[in-house]
Structure formats: C-alpha cells, structure tokens
Image 1 (cartoon, rainbow, N blue to C red):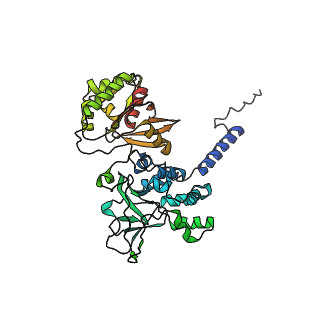
Image 2: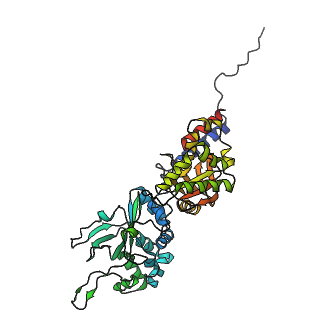
Length: 437
C-alpha cells in the first residue's frame, strides 16, 4: 500500500527578516549615522555662570552709567564674561561727563553709527586690561622717564606714566579715583577722560576725510601738558578734581559707588541698630500677609533674628528670599524633622549682599544665569531670567520672585518667592524619596 508522503515540518530556523522590516532598520541606521555626523566632536562648553559679586555686575549697576550703556550697546557683555572666566580684569572707567559732554559731537556720532560698531568695541575694550592692578601695583616706576606699556583687550597698547606731581596717567587720562569698585575678579579705577586708541583715530579720520591730527579735537585736552609762556618750558599737569568737586580724598577714593547693589562690609558701626532693623523687616513680613511661617522660624523656632541683627551691627547687608506660607506648607515631615533643618533652610534663603528686585532682574536679563552666595556655605543659589521675572533654583524645588521689595532699607532687602529652595543635591534626594513612596 502506498503511503502518503509526509509534508515537511516547518523550519525551526529563525524567520527571515521581512523586506519592510529590513527597510526600516536600514533607515534607522542611516539616520543615526547622519545624526552622529551632524553633532560636533567637541560640543561647545556652556556659557559661564557669572557671580552676583562680579566686577562686571558691579560696573553695570554703578554710577558709571554712560560706560555701562555703551558696553551693552556694543554687544560686549559676552566678551567681558569670557575675559573674567579666564582671570581678572581692570577697567579704566571714564566719568559720565567725559562720555557725555567732553567728546566732540561728530566723533560721538561716528561711534554710535551702526556701521562703526567695531570702532566702538575697540574704543571700549581699550579701557580694559586682563590684569588686576591696585594703587600699590601700578605698572611703572615714578622715577622712570619711559612709560610702561600693557596690552588692553582691544589688542592696542596702553601707556602708564606719572605726572609732574606724581599723579598716575593711563595714556592721556589721569586716574582720578583709585579702587572705585573692588571685587574678587577685578577692579575699576575712574579716569578723567576717554582714551582713544590709534586704530579708532584712523577709522574716524578715514571716515570723515580729516587731517590725521584733527581727531585730537574729538576729546577735550583737559589736563594735558602745557607750555609755560614765561619760561618756555613744559608746565606740570593741571590737577583735576574728582567728580563732585573738591580734592580727591581717601574717603572718596574708597567709598562704595553711589548705586552699588551690595554695600561692602566694614568694621563695627555703632550707629547701626541691627536689632531694630531686623524687627522692622519681620514685622513688615507679618503685616504684609502670607509670610507668617518665615517670621515664625526667624523669631520663635531659631535664634536667627539675633544673628542677623549682629551682622547688621558689623556693617554687613543681606537679602532674604522669603518663601510664602503656601510654599512652606508643602514641606514634608522628613524635610523638617532633622536637627537644625529650619536653620539650614533659612540660611540657604539669605544672600549676603544687598539686592533689590530691579538689580536682580537686570543681572539675569543681561547674563541669563547668575549665581548668588548664601549664608549656607558653600552652597549657592542660581537665578535665571524667566519671562520678565527671576527664577531661583532648578527643577521642582524652585521659586519665582513674585512679591518684589517687600522690605528695603539699604541694608536689608526682603523679596517674596513662591517656592522653598534647596541645594541641588538635596533637591534630588527629596525627589527620589517622593518617587520611592
């Protein structure tokens, strides 16, 4: 009997890839290859986070308003950020009078024309050195007849000399205010006039078809050497008073800038009443409404109110970022149960410098990201521009400045925020704990 042949059983080998799947796989491989090719081998590092006590922020908030406006107009803030990231700088800042009234109007118009922004940038960078100089470290010997030369950020050289009375000069500009502003990353010295580099002189002359010597009229020759008609010899340079008139005393030279956002700490100031000022700001928090929890921690749960009063008596200033009652109510038992937790939380919300809503917003508007020291060392708070406001911190544990200038008296500033802030590592720990639950 004939038996029916058995049909071969299905193959146990892996199934062949279907044409559609193969096409998709090839497309994905091709896309990944192109993406790798498009990505730079060495991605650009993120922009530096500028510190709130940087010399650059101090300059922009100082009484050198004309220079500050020109630096922004010339798009030089990023250049100066990079210079500070690489070291320290010294700025020879012309007075507002020198930039407003002492420049020839035709030269001023030339600098502000959009097509001449390179000349404006060169002029401004000619006033900045990548070095840190103080009065004791002036780069020339008063007895030397030849000037000392240093290269500015403009790549042109500045000459340092002394006048007949021993007063220091940078180019043709006399230094009228030493150490006008001093920060950890630079110093600002006030100078009487604008220092015009040769390259900008050439640009101006070529643009206007002038005689090369005529650019000297663009800057008022105040304080330059003069010939004494009686002796036919060079007269000593005329002494020029510091802005505001009168002699440039040591008190003027070391005074904080008129609009500086962070008064410098000093020794004991017995005329300050720290206890009264702290009580005033705590009462203001209570009467303002919505900040009773912060006031309760300061007065009843800790002795921080007394500590802050002592800081004021010592001449320090500070800014309190006060979380609202609604934000404080979101704190968990774990966040408050550790010994010393309330103190640590409050310390992290106190910035040891005087800031207002305006100064903080201006800083983040210009630099996008600014870091602030806190009393909880070594932790810092990072602030960013957030659609017309200031956002402190990152991620879920962040807060927006939404009640500005609740209290400001020149030493204590209180700014209301809508979140409780934590250092990044604690913030990550809290988020992981929440996910674990």
